Image (cartoon, rainbow, N blue to C red; front, side, top):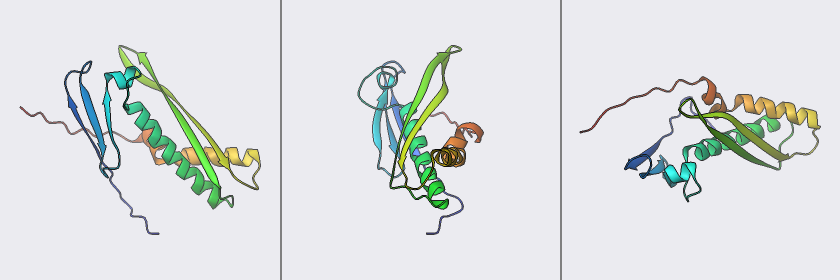
Length: 147
């Protein structure tokens, strides 16, 4: 399968109201994911999603594909991989920050020793584009105001 050299993916958000009482909708460019979010879905247990949950899902999906590719390239094609992620959001310096992300994975892979699996999982973590973006990619902001 041919993979293009440059691919751009998109998402959009519509928000109404103030931060404490407002609400928004997140939609992916493909239209496959549409989700509501608000202050309550981010900082309480209200139904909906939040940016940290979506960031975690993106990282888990990217890492899992990278792990599959890394294992397969090294002669250990997995039968299945399950990955979960916890994105920690902490109040800090008058705002919030993400000080850590926990990535937990379990794979069904025959014929591989634990040490080799751990090494290949680390390689996959280092090669995952979403993981790299969290540390190295500048965020370019284009902002305009409507009246």
